[in-house]
Image 1 (cartoon, rainbow, N blue to C red):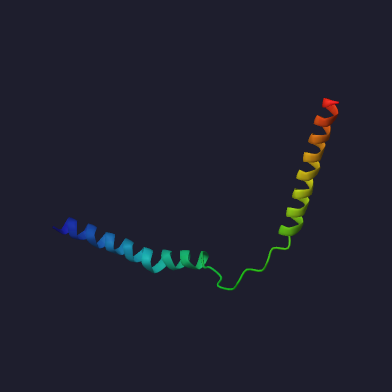
Image 2: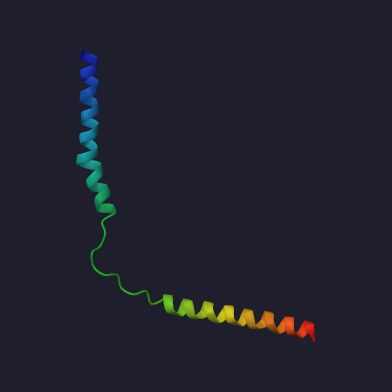
Length: 70
Protein backbone atom coordinates (compact mmCIF):
# COMPACT_ATOMS: atom_id res chain seq x y z
CA UNK A 1 0.00 0.00 0.00
CA UNK A 2 2.84 2.36 0.78
CA UNK A 3 4.16 2.15 -2.78
CA UNK A 4 0.75 3.01 -4.26
CA UNK A 5 0.26 5.87 -1.81
CA UNK A 6 3.69 7.27 -2.69
CA UNK A 7 2.84 7.16 -6.40
CA UNK A 8 -0.47 8.91 -5.74
CA UNK A 9 1.30 11.63 -3.73
CA UNK A 10 3.91 12.06 -6.46
CA UNK A 11 1.21 12.35 -9.09
CA UNK A 12 -0.69 14.94 -7.02
CA UNK A 13 2.53 16.90 -6.50
CA UNK A 14 3.18 16.93 -10.26
CA UNK A 15 -0.38 18.03 -10.99
CA UNK A 16 -0.11 20.80 -8.40
CA UNK A 17 3.24 21.86 -9.86
CA UNK A 18 1.65 22.25 -13.27
CA UNK A 19 -1.27 24.22 -11.86
CA UNK A 20 0.87 26.44 -9.65
CA UNK A 21 3.95 27.09 -11.78
CA UNK A 22 3.58 26.05 -15.42
CA UNK A 23 0.03 27.14 -16.20
CA UNK A 24 0.39 30.77 -14.98
CA UNK A 25 3.64 31.10 -16.93
CA UNK A 26 1.99 29.80 -20.10
CA UNK A 27 -1.02 32.06 -19.59
CA UNK A 28 1.28 35.06 -19.21
CA UNK A 29 3.12 34.14 -22.42
CA UNK A 30 -0.04 33.76 -24.50
CA UNK A 31 -1.96 36.63 -22.95
CA UNK A 32 -4.17 38.29 -25.54
CA UNK A 33 -4.30 42.05 -25.67
CA UNK A 34 -7.93 43.19 -25.48
CA UNK A 35 -7.21 46.53 -27.16
CA UNK A 36 -8.13 46.74 -30.84
CA UNK A 37 -5.22 46.09 -33.12
CA UNK A 38 -3.93 49.06 -35.11
CA UNK A 39 -4.37 48.81 -38.83
CA UNK A 40 -1.38 47.47 -40.67
CA UNK A 41 0.04 50.29 -42.83
CA UNK A 42 1.93 47.81 -45.01
CA UNK A 43 -1.16 45.93 -46.20
CA UNK A 44 -2.47 48.52 -48.68
CA UNK A 45 0.84 49.25 -50.50
CA UNK A 46 1.59 45.53 -50.60
CA UNK A 47 -1.85 44.77 -52.06
CA UNK A 48 -1.53 47.56 -54.62
CA UNK A 49 1.93 46.55 -55.78
CA UNK A 50 0.88 42.91 -56.06
CA UNK A 51 -2.23 43.87 -58.03
CA UNK A 52 -0.20 46.04 -60.40
CA UNK A 53 2.36 43.27 -60.87
CA UNK A 54 -0.41 40.77 -61.69
CA UNK A 55 -2.04 43.23 -64.10
CA UNK A 56 1.26 43.89 -65.91
CA UNK A 57 1.92 40.14 -66.13
CA UNK A 58 -1.57 39.52 -67.53
CA UNK A 59 -1.21 42.31 -70.09
CA UNK A 60 2.22 41.02 -71.14
CA UNK A 61 0.87 37.49 -71.61
CA UNK A 62 -2.08 38.78 -73.66
CA UNK A 63 0.24 40.94 -75.76
CA UNK A 64 2.59 38.00 -76.42
CA UNK A 65 -0.34 35.75 -77.37
CA UNK A 66 -1.77 38.44 -79.67
CA UNK A 67 1.66 38.98 -81.23
CA UNK A 68 2.12 35.25 -81.81
CA UNK A 69 -1.33 34.96 -83.44
CA UNK A 70 -0.57 37.75 -85.94
